[in-house]
Each structure stands twice: as C-alpha cells, then as structure tokens.
Length: 502
Image (tube, rainbow, N blue to C red; front, side):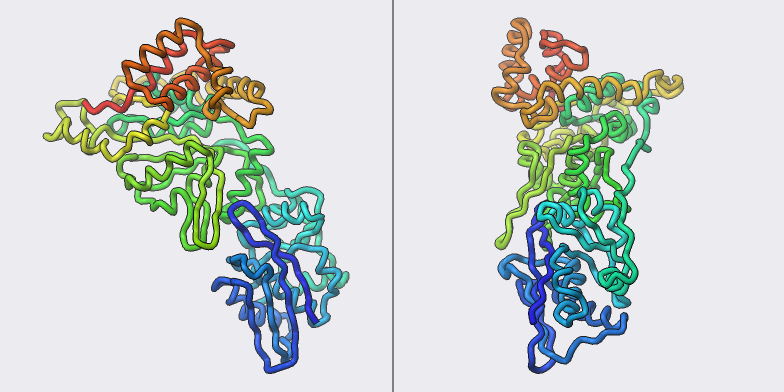
C-alpha cells in the first residue's frame, strides 16, 4: 500500500508542492528516504521512529520507502517530519487516506512526539489556500497560519493529539490570527540636539523612500538619527505587511504568529559576510537586505565593511530584489530597502578639527573613503555632512518638534505618492523611473536650467541626474506643491554633494 501526504519545499518566497509517498513492502525491515533530501530530512527517520514509539506505536517489520516527489527538487529542512509520520500512519491504516488528502502538512517532530515549529508556515498556509486545502502545522504557529484566510488550520501540539483530532475523539480548537504589531519603541527626534540640516534630510528620506548617507565626527548623533527613522515612517499597508511577514516567516523570525506592521529596521555589524548581507549560504536563506524589505537597512561605520560586501548591494538597491544563483537552484528574495549609512570622514574621525585630527590628515580621509566605490555612492540620493555637537547644543532644552510632528508630514507626503502612483506598480518617489519620472518630476524652466548647469558642473551621471529629480519631487510633496520649482531643485542638489575629504 502507498499513502500520499502533501507538503511543500521552499524556494525563496515560493512554496513548491511536494508529495510524500510512503510504501510498506515485504522484505527485510528497512527505512529509506529518497527524493534529493538533505541531512535534516534523512534524519527524519530517527525522529519519526522515536515519536511513534513515544505514543505507543512501533514501525511494522517491513521495508519502508519514503519518496519525496518530485525527486529532482532539493528538499531541505525538518518540516518533513510530520508529513512522513502521517504518511506512515496512513500506510499502516491508522489514519484514513482520504482525510490526509485534504491537508498540506508541515512540522518537526520531537522524540517525545511533540510537534515543534519550523520556518515558512505562512508560505505553506498561502500555498494550501491556493490549492483549496487545509493545513496541519505546529500549534505554536497556528496563529501565523490563520492569517492565510478562510482555510482549515489544524494546530497540532503533538502527534497523539493530532491522531485524536483525526479520529474525532478530541478535536483541536481552530487557531485565531495572531496579534498585529503596533507602536514604536525606538528613540524620538526630540532626543537629537541641533543637526537641523541632517534632520531635514532625514525627513526627506522618509517621505520619499530615499537612500541616505551621513558623514561626521564620532558622537555627532548619526546612529541616533538613523534609529529615529522607523518612528517617522508610516506603518506597512496590509499587502506590504504580508510581504514582510512572508520573508520573516521563511527566516523563522515571525514571533507568536504576529503579522508585522512596523517597517523593519536592520543594523548588521560591519563584520557581516556577503551571504549574511545579501543572502545565500549552504542552505539559501534571506540576508539582511531582504529582512529589511520595505524598511530600513542601516549600515554604521560604512567604510569598515568589506568592499566586495558593499558592492554586492548595488544590484539590490537598483532592482529591489536579490537573486542567489546555485548550481541546482536559482532563488530570488525581495529587497526593496531604504539604505541609510553612517561614517566618519576618516579613521580618526576628526578630519575637520585641526586640534584633534591625526598627523596623516587629509591623506587619511582619502584612503579611508576609497573603500567606497563610486557606483555605490551614486545610488545614494542624500549625502549629508553632520557637524560635531557642541556643549552649547547639549544644554539647550529638547526641540519642540519630535517624531510625531515629522511623521505627520511624512504620512501626508506618502499619501500624495500613493494617489499619484496608483496602478503604476510604484510606491514612492524613490522608485519612479523612465517615462513615469519624466511625467511626475519635470521641473519648471528655471529649475531645468539650474539642473542642467549643475549636472555639467558636478559631472552627474544619468543615475545621479534622475535621483536629483526624485529628491526634488519629494521636497515639493512635503511642501504641498504640485510642480517642481527652482528652489526644490536647488535643495535636492545641495544633498548631492559627495562626502567631503578635506
């Protein structure tokens, strides 16, 4: 007899259908798992054997063959434990085969029969919903799966409880969708003393989704302002929340089934590898740039990152996605992030202060900043010089305007962009390109003349030229202006200056 159980294999943010086929045949007792399974799947044999023993069942003295079909699709992860166990129980006649055919099954088994959580349950639930099936998953992830919509979700705390549910002796309660994240627990802009120019640039970056780099001496407040950015960004829309939650689910970071509504904020250390930043590894996983999808990726001490690691961000910043190529798979993760970076002007950090600068100034600044490639800097819209904070600034009372007031202006500008780009597949000014950018961001005659002269004098690339237009469009939106004038272009150009080296 052959029993069939549906489960999934994850390929990026795509859940591929996998059929677990279990056959009991005469012959010497054996337990084989075939179908291009990795080490974790091969070890399912021992976990399944122990879990069945824990609930008072033993494997039949037959030749057991488990085939994971299609056989040419790589299978990774421990979520195949539960479908293999249910397939065995179906082949043994303990569970009705028709009952098993109504569900997609995922879950890891403990040696005592408990069902543990695994990454990707939200993707499995959406896959089951598309196929008109129910989902069997760990009880701890039932609230996560319940977000998939009107599908039957069976949250199993253990293998014995699941058997009793299928037999109708002790039905398991249907899980409810998990809570939605709310509020922001980060710092407030009222904590930033002085730095009015940098705070204005931060507001523009938030309003239009622009990339930004801040350069200044240690202790100037660069990291603090970056940490304030999530507090002035609008919450994710329902569709955006689903996108972000899917990435978190695949990475195993979705806590208690809570759908993510706050924009992600990721701040990896400068020792991060290329695989950690953009994704990959032996078992392909999303990197920091994907975990920050539709949120903020903050890179502090930017020149301290390896140059190859930084340059690996160039394509994601342009396309909004990461493609990880392997010999046996090609995996794509979303990566539409807002890059915010901070750096010192040189290694000692005090280039502009003769009393504190090292003896190698200004040569040390050129050497330090040479780690940053021109193409990467060209993809950053706002270049801001952050001055040192003086004692006079620190004794001043907190500014009257904080994150709440700035967030209101940012939300109003984002609402304008949402209406403008409805049906265009674009969310913010930072994503506008081509004919669409020409239509929405063409300045008036005075603005065109200024931009033309500045582009020649500053030797702007085509990318740099278009990024100035995008920033000018955002500045006009913050001011409530339909058109782009010379003053908007002038302010946008002021942020296009490269980080100073002297």
